[in-house]
Image (cartoon, rainbow, N blue to C red; front, side, top):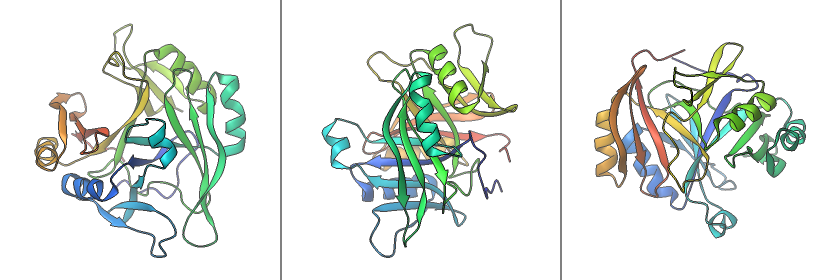
Length: 265
């Protein structure tokens, strides 16, 4: 089982869902992915933890009023581990990006912080988060059914995205396939960590990060999603490592479902 006790700096390490209806989302993802949940027993923190095999896999939370008033739709967020949140925030502008929220401590139940977070946008406008662990590392399980498996940035400018992420995270950018304008694969010391999108970004859709969630059977998961208020945007299809589909949950947050032939460690 791909258990994680830590995440190396420069590695996508956590995902969470900002939504307008937490309870509906919890029902939907439990049906589609088999998630269990843990809530803060004190009631102090309005953040629900999705659990796979007893380990934290993702988060779900109510969108704050400022996100709603700014017209931000329900969405999945990607967090990338960094050793120093404040130091990272200082690098963003020099690399052509923007800090949306400076480094802040994220609480967990009790007196201690779970970690320190920065919200930033790359030069193309795609928003992402970074995570410096204090009490929580991020995901305790990845690359498994029900767990986070991949992150990709959908952008109109692969070159600008590649330059930015290479500078701030030390990623190496290379071609994913033979197409001259094809997706970029990001690696860290030779290990794949993320990519730009394999599908062109539709006109009018702003750049954004998207997540892939593992499932034992993409076709069955899509059928369950459709009968639980979701929308199958791209029906299941075969690709190199396995089978995938694109789905929107009942609040229209978009994500990918993936079944891999060989689940990585």
